[in-house]
Image (cartoon, rainbow, N blue to C red; front, side, top):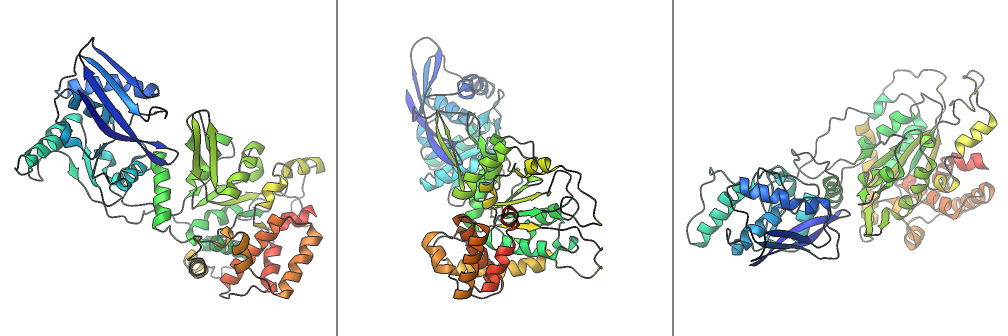
Length: 522
């Protein structure tokens, strides 16, 4: 007998339908799995066999052929276990296959029949909903995650036997004109989840940073326009403190952004079972400088998202940026420009979203005290060591950093006067963000940093004084076209923070003042 069961897998960060076809015919007892399965999929036969037998059902002693379609797509992981078991039970006549129409199965089986969670339940659920599938059966521990999306019935089961004696028996009673058992009956339950805001234990506040007003101003500009940011200064000047407070200044994710970010964390298996809604807070990823290029950008024989993708719509913070390997730093150039990561392998090409803000810090030299005043601690680095240290970050990468801000050591401890709080700063940022939303409502972008081509010319027009100033600086510092455009985008954000539409010469002058690396190179 032949039967087809619907399942799904994840390609990149998007769901992909997999049809599990099971055919049972007379012959020597043998199970064949075809359709480019990997080791985990081939081993599913033994897990399914034991789960069916330990669940009180019979594993057929016939020739069983299992095909995973489309056959030209590599199948990885254990998410097909539940679908394979359902297909075998239906093809052997132990379950009525008509009860499983319009149903998607996701889950891994243990030897005793327990159904375990698998990564990527959310994107697979989104795929099922968009295709009009009425019902999805998932591990009970994944119900909260799958129920984040309305418009589809989500049934959670904890074991294979529970599915047989709960969902299948109830469906059979309903088809015969009876009534389904009471809600107190043990078995799968359809659980609805209303999306909410994820709570975080974040006690950081901008008021913790005393002084460094220029650094705080740079944070406001970066948070308002999603501009890349680099702080340069000696140790202990507050570079890391400022960067770690960036998320407290930024608005929460909207519906589309929240769904995209939650899907990424689902694929990476980083959603907790107590998830109470889509992720609303922007990610702040701070990898250690010993991270590999594959860990930062993504990769592997089976491509997986890296830190740049986990920072999608959020912040990627590189503390002591020159300490990262040059391979890692140069690999950032393409994601910063294209806002996505493309990883090609012999098995196919995967694309991961990577629209993030890069925030970084660095010392002026290996010891950290180069360029200080007479009263400061003297630098002990040789010119060769300083040149080698700065060369770890190439010119093309530095060119992609919008704000390059020097933070000097504070010679005198500031007074205990009231400092700007994160809540106050967020109000300023939100005003600028709302102006951008209104301006770009018909263009499909949200931030000034996304302006390109005709949109940049249209919305970042300069008056004659501002244009003359930018032209002079462009010639004197030998700026690139990329740096020229990034100054324009920053000027647009600075004008938005001031609450005005026209960009003045003072806005351009402030934007230029944040390009300290260009000035040093000159």
